[in-house]
Image: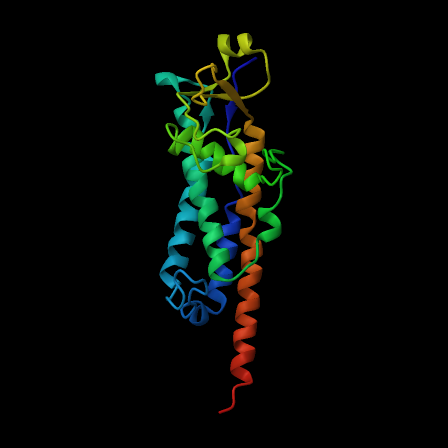
Length: 235
């Protein structure tokens, strides 16, 4: 297996298009409030701006990031960095969809990229990405909130995640780009390895970031309905 360099290419025009849509009737966007129960009635403008700024800067950062298959310090820390920052973009898109009441139920239910439905067959690409990020990056010593991927264990631990390159790659003999070591805390188990493919990671991040265009369409519908409501208001 020859070492590769992975670099994603996200369309940075999408966030600029989204910004234009928000600005078309900014006096309405300025007045948009959260509809959900948690922040119901709170003005959402500051959050909208924060999401757009975070998406813009992080997309540029991710596009410039070159992921070499290097296991310096015993881990694929560059992959961890990518996962954390990619999650910022995806969370921001989800927040914008929530603010403007854009339904992503269908998209959230897809399982076509990772094809990991889990023990209950109800797993999705979104849930599996969250599981990988928890296990490999943010909760490596206690991944416990993804039961369908834990094989009925109370929690999983991940001592390291490494690029599958060089001598290690030849010994393993598979095509995975990374392998996460996983312990399930059973006395009779030596643990397992979870293969990770960068093509799947990139495809998922591009797809979820691309949903910002659907959110933009939802904003136009919100603007149109609000203006129509004002037109029909009796003076």
